[in-house]
Image 1: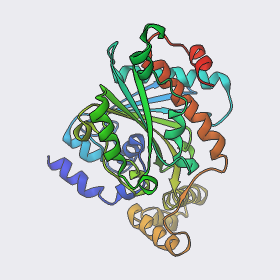
Image 2: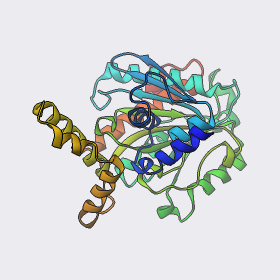
Image 3: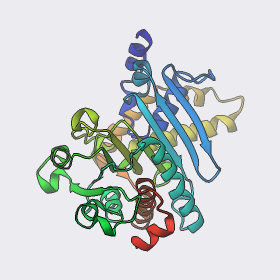
Length: 341
C-alpha cells in the first residue's frame, strides 16, 4: 500500500482537474507517473479494441492501489470514442448503436426476466445537462405492458421502467433519495443511470460514451457532487452511462498553454531553454493560477459547443437505441426505429 499512498499524495491536486472520464484519469497517470514506462500502473488493466471510427478502451481497476492511482472505484470502465459522433452520418449512427449495445450486453449480464430501472439524471431545462431525460423519452418502457397485457408483448421483451427525477434545484429533493425510494418500491435487478459528464479535452466533448459498473456521483465533474448512486447506496448493481457535454474553462486553458509551449519548443530547436523552463512549471500550480485569473471575470465557468442542442438530441438517440437493443432480446435497430420515432 506504500505505492497507493504515494500516488494518492502525488495526485491530490491533479484530480481537481475536472473530468469524469476514467480514460482521461488513466492518461494523466501515464503522463505523470509512468510516462517513461510501457507497463500499466499497478492494479490497472487496459484493453484496446474497435475500429478507426469507433475506438473502444476497456479499463479495469483491480486493486486498492489502482483505485488510488486512477481516483475511481474498483470496477470496469468502457469508453467508446467516436470522433464523428457529432456528424449526421446514418451509417455511423447505426454502427455506434450496435457497438454500444454489444458492450452493454457484456456488462449487464441480464436474465430473461430481469427488471431494469433506467434513471435519466440531469436538468431538462439546461441543454448540456438534459442528456438523461432525453434518453428516457426514447426508451422502450415495457414493465407496465408485461404486468397488465402480457399476452400482447413479444417474447424476449424484458420489463423496463424509466424515470427522470430532475435535480435538487427543481424538486427540492436529493436525486439519490428519489431513486432510492423508487428502487425500494420497484425492486429492479439492475439500475442504469444516464448522465452528462465533464471532460478535460475539447475533442472528447459530445464524441465519447463511457460505461461504468461502479455507479455514479451526479454532478461530480462540475464540482457539484451529490449523493452517490451505487450498489452500496441502492442495494442493486448500478451501471452508469455518460457523455461529456462540457469542459472546464481553466482546464482547457491549461491544456492550450501546454500545446503552445510544445509548439514553441519545436520551433525554437536549440534555443529553447526559456520555453523548457515554462514547460517544467508544475501543472497543478499553473492550473490554480489560471483559475485565480479567470475567477473575477467568469467565475466557475464550463464550456460547451454552440451546436449542443442538435448534438445532444442525436447522442440521446444513440444511447437510447443502444439500450433498447441490449435490454430486449431479439430486438433489432429496425424494430426500435418503428417503435420510437
